[in-house]
Image (cartoon, rainbow, N blue to C red; front, side, top):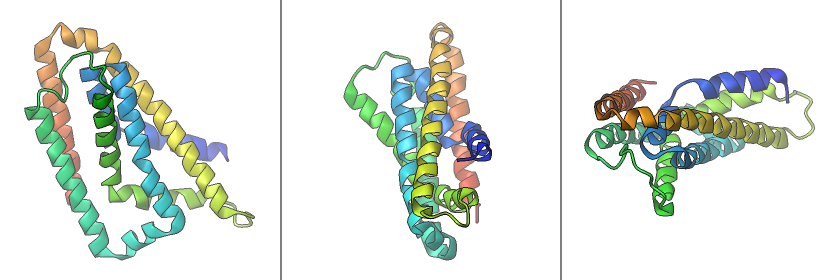
Amino acid sequence: MSLEFLLTSLVVVLLPGTGVIYTLAIGLGRGFRASVAAAFGCTLGILPAAVASIIGLAALLHTSAMAFQIIKYLGVAYLFYMAWKILNDKSVMQVTENKEKSGFYRIAMTGTLLNILNPKLSLFFLAFLPQFIAQNSANATASLVWLAVIFMAMTFIVFVIYGACAAYARDYVIQRPSVMNWIKRCFAGTFGFLGAKLAFSN
């Protein structure tokens, strides 16, 4: 594992995407423990894409326009659904101490679906991971698995930090309900923008 891989992975993980936005939203609305569940779900959602790239299914998405389009529009629909839900479902970003495990399961499941329904993730792994495998590697599959695990671990750690920062800001938000309303609109708008962006991707 090279320093180049670690630095590149860190830059990719730090970039705001659907997982980051979702984790921040949950951290603001539900607190740190809930944001950890969101981070775990988003990280778990990377697993299918990593496995697909390792066994070659991502190549199918790259060559089959139909397969890519089906998954893409499922992802678009889910992002638009998340935008609608943030605006209309008061429980999504309600500032409460939600200690119910079932609530955490639901949060993690939503985060998982956000990444599973992103076809670009598998294409990213297909293009990203092989760059860091030596041509004379004795066991390329094992190396790919190890790199994917490291990437997922980095994702989880960074997302937990994002969630902690959002949870830290909750006291400010609790005292200013109007701020939370604007934040909800911003998050909903971001999900809508990401959905539109995905819809027009090739």
